[in-house]
Length: 102
Image (tube, rainbow, N blue to C red; front, top):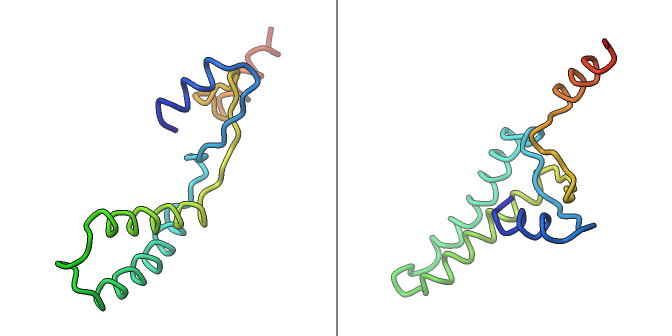
């Protein structure tokens, strides 16, 4: 989530934004998918004369491949203005136990 997303959520009530749930991100799966997708891009680039290619187009292709990998592997979660992303499930349970011990 970048700063712009945080500002949009903070300024607008009832806005929901989907972001990557980093604690649930499967790095091993991402690595496998990335190896496959970037390998295909590499093979495509091997067939071209990269010196004659538009660098903006090459960057766009690379970004597209990385975004595709994230879309195929990432777990998303929805946040709102009232979300507390710093509180994990473990911390929430501990807070609940603290509250019930009074």
